[in-house]
Amino acid sequence: MSKKIQAIRGMNDLLPDASPVWQYFEAQVQALMKRYGYNEIRTPIVEQTALFARSIGEVTDIVEKEMYTFDDRNGDSLTLRPEGTASAVRAAMEHGLLYNQTQRLWYTGPMFRHERPQKGRYRQFHQVGVETYGLEGPDIDAEVILLSARLWKQLGLFEHVTLELNSLGSNEARAAYRDTLVAYFEAHREVLDEDSVRRLTSNPLRILDSKNPAMAAMLSGAPQLMDHLDQESRDHFNALTARLDAAGIDYVINPRLVRGLDYYCRTVFEWTTDALGSQGTVCAGGRYDGLVEQLGGKPTPAVGFAMGIERLILLLETLNIVPEEARAPLDVYVLGMDSATDGDAMALAETLRDQLPELGVQLHCGGGSFKSRIKKADRSGARLALLIGENERDTGQVAIKFLRDDREQQLVEQASLETTLERLLSD
Ligand code: ATP
Ligand code: MG
Image (cartoon, rainbow, N blue to C red; front, side, top):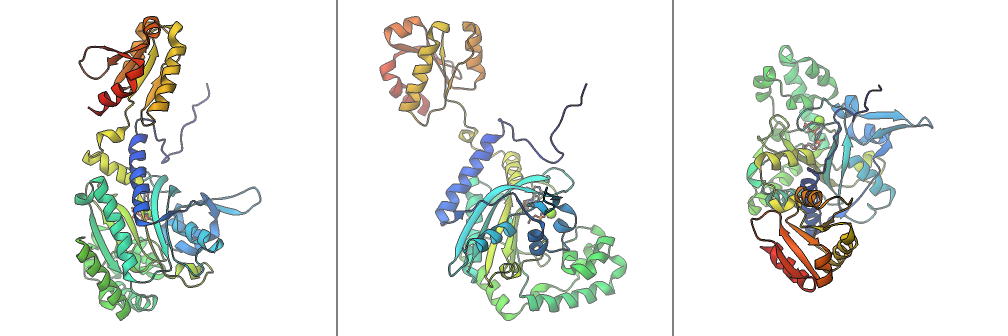
């Protein structure tokens, strides 16, 4: 017997029981973006490998070891996108969206990274992201943070997440700081783990990000980027925190927040939770003023973030705060009592769909005995069953059976069914 083919490790199916929560989340996101005047952009899932290598940086975890890269049939090196920013910049440049105008964009979709699968970490995962172009002031940094904060409020998560903030300064300030930092690490070389020794020459700031407890004490004594900021970045950061204060958004300044990607400058931030164990970052972003130019465009200030949908759904489920109506239960199950009335049931279901477009109506299909029909109605999860037998058909009536409540079956005129259902389902 041949072995059954299974899904790829770390790539999940979203099963029918789980999809309503995702739809609830997605609907909240869409509504939010509209409220802030952000427009959706959709880009292909596959891009030229060079796009990610050039934008994310050669010495990042993503480019070094996490990308799904392959040669297509023409021998071109392609990569399944590991994140959305590079594609958004590529598309915006390619279609002239950055020419003499500002943009506020958002996207959602699957991303691919070859990581060790665990709770909150998958090889295909999904993000919602926001990217803004052409705005350099701290007002837009504040706006994208307020936008994310509003989503947490909409979802009931605001009390459960913490905003961490840092500034990476200008490229020049960061380069100078980098030298100071490397000197400090050199002086403590004996405490550095293998990864950190490697990063010492390639990406020393990332060492600050290390979770290795053996290095914790040494890291907490390291010189801080905040103390080495250029004046403009300092002003930018202070203006941002003033906006957040005014909006009543609390934050923690985390001097060791450096983010994994090369392209950030000035503002970086993360929203974290301690309800999910070590996969606690649910949203991360910052300013990346140099990226457009790095990819061959005109210098264009940019700020954005990406949130991990799986982690947010996990958080909603863990905290048990998904509203009951988000589970999208079926409203009614329509059935003929036997094969003679199947056609009438179908006609009734269609009439209801005309009259009450919001109603979830499932029609009994597949025939069967009366008993098996009722069983299927029960299993459908609907609140009400609408039954038509030959008697009902001849008298223009329909029987309403309450599947969830202990109530007597009712007979109603088909002509008044619309109003009866509206009343019954709004209880
Ligand atoms: P981490 O430090 O957890 O690896 P990251 O810095 O690599 O995160 P980003 O590239 O900033 O993550 O992506 C933004 C968000 O996308 C993360 O904060 C997280 O919520 C989510 N995310 C990233 N990688 C994964 C993954 N492999 N599985 C599920 N969600 C992920
Ligand atoms: Mg990562």
